[in-house]
View (tube, each protein chain N blue to C red):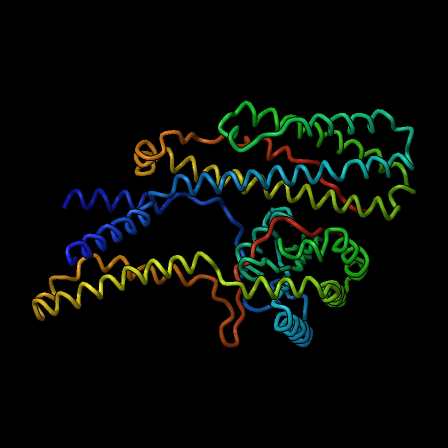
Length: 197
Length: 252
């Protein structure tokens, strides 16, 4: 009995110390990166949800800007189609497609906001102002979510590529793959800034 | 010995993974951090008292900060980083908010923590900034603008009783992770004591000395279990809340 007990204590102690030295890091970081990705997708979705309202509001004052309005609607439709589920995150091509679709939408939105500068009635419309501030907040959240995702992926990939994480992964999590991330250049040419005044 | 040195070097390499560059944040000295010296002592004390009263009532942390420089960062970017760095808002509830004024960059922002985004929406913060703050700032009345902004934010935060109630519920729920860690540590400690006692019975004091293997680890578990402490006696510190870019900015 005593022998059993001390052995059990030893095993538990060893398991505890293994956990402390990072045997769980790979799945933990992977989950964190996936959660960060969901947040990115959430925030882009939130932007998508704002757009129909924005388009309607602008239409009410500037229906003649048909080209710009259509390009926004089309870019939104396309961006809605390109979704990535968490299992595709290891595929850089999928991420690139997602990013391109969203960037096209950012460009179209930027043009829409630029032309709305020409319509004083629109600019002072309360509904438009509200939408504008929501859009600005969403662009902000997208930037934050993207940065968090980049950080989480950096931590996860570093764990996979460095020792001892590399050994642990080869041993216990052979299916773990490095994840794709946003390229830094895209961060610099960031979404259009919505400015007041 | 050489092996030990090699392992130590690896450890150091692990610990030294480069962190992303952060701006040079001012220290969190209270609920009003007037690094740009826009407020006189009386204003500062009055605002501080209101913010403290509000936190005592609702646990929401709202901090006013003035900055001499944004160090080249966009104010929105700076705001999120500062909020996370200070950990404004309670841990898990993320009910923190910042009013950031950067007079030399001519920028102002209300940064809203995750947990307050539903109450203090982007649209409302934009209304507060454009309606209450910017007109006064444009006339050079910084204390007045800050006071008006604080008034409005607190009004919005007070306006929603249902949310306050939900937050109180969330605050009182025990943290599950802590319980698991606690149970684990208690189990190990219990086994250890059991072995000690049996050894002592069998072999006397000698057995007690020999039987204490594997205990150094378990004592370490205590420190990691006790996260999320905040507010000491009279000082003020962030509760560990997080930010996700909510709120809005204005320029003048």
